Length: 93
Length: 403
Ligand SMILES: Cc1cc2nc3c(=O)[nH]c(=O)nc-3n(C[C@H](O)[C@H](O)[C@H](O)COP(=O)(O)OP(=O)(O)OC[C@H]3O[C@@H](n4cnc5c(N)ncnc54)[C@H](O)[C@@H]3O)c2cc1C
Image (cartoon, rainbow over all chains, first blue to last red; front, side, top):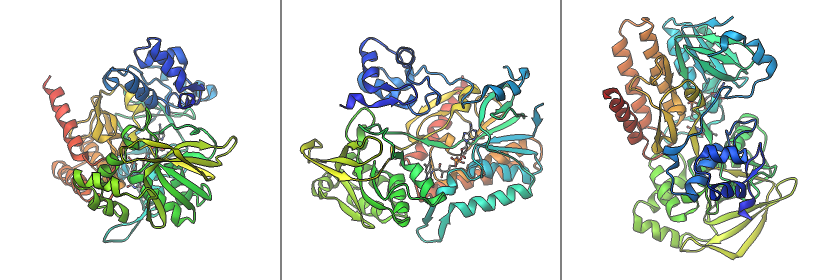
């Protein structure tokens, strides 16, 4: 029953999906993300990023704090395309 | 066209406002950005009586700081989310505006950790901080019969807030043991944790548990003698031997399923009880919100005592990206007074860099002392070992500088 909890609400990924992904060999948080889409929704992992760390920590011997390879990317907050285009070209890094 | 300022501050909580007031009072042109319609950050939800002194009314303090900011001519960009920082340094707001500055303060505060348990995504379940915002800021009851899951400084404080708001708090419970709760589900560990927080706590239950749990042997006794029916604090049952194993309800929260934890820490599943509630608050602790430091390219360290991953910072609160400073809970989770003092310190440091101070060294020294005093006298401590966490960061910074 516990395995049916939703972990990534945006992409509707269950705890069971994440554990299965680890059991199938996903050895990094990024691998879990790529396989399950956890953390790829509109909130950009603001809720489940830490939960993914915890699942990995619990189910593997990997030191997740050191091995965390999830990056943060711009935009860190949702932004409409209209406002993005208003930001202009000179905003590119 | 980007708008230029001497200093751009992101986050108008006590840290960001503290920095803005000091820098602007020395003559810097300051922009202050926050996603909320009103400045104040988490300060606005805080109401409690200080041990020997007066009531700490966050909304009033925030309003006074806001007045000062306006008088000093700080430009406020409210209801704007910062979605990116580009070198060196362009701050992008989500309505299309752009700010530019050599100096940026990240004062984005902390956010809550969830503890998933079965049923945690049912409407009517919320993070404990949301209940504080509803009750103390908007004066709306989050529910009529509320259960709280997770025992810590914040959940006890907010349980009291809810009680004052006229909510029937049916109990404060432990989460069940799982990937996410770990030690937070262990009665013995929770007594030890609570006792470590108790020395200055404004709140009588923490004091009581402090006395109960100073030594390991007493802690064990504490669990054994802790009545399975809980102990009442201001009429709220505090259950160190009961876990909420499931939240029930299809469209809305209807009840919680509660199980007793036996003396060895195991769940007695035969003893499950259904308790009707219409709202559940989960408290999983706080961690620093650091996404902007990350996209700005700051180096990070993991320091458990401060709440997790934080940008590495110097004794001048500067990150490894020159010109980007940090203040407040985004550097480690502490109370509002510490955050405010950290903000003022950063305000002084940046004013000095801008060449606005005559006696900069002296002022900065005083501001640093103020942070230490605030930390020492803090009435609320989220991490018992915060001081050693702060020292660890400086140590790591110096190590890096040597390399
Ligand atoms: C739910 C909760 C309850 C708390 N309760 C207490 C309490 O009862 N007592 C106590 O002493 N401490 C409490 N704290 C700790 C609290 O964080 C500090 O007291 C203090 O408010 C920290 O100040 P700060 O300025 O660092 O951050 P905050 O007060 O959190 O202010 C940060 C501000 O930055 C804004 N922000 C963040 N990112 C962006 C962005 N990208 N764009 C625009 N704006 C942004 C936020 O919306 C917020 O307004 C609580 C914290 C939380 C999270």
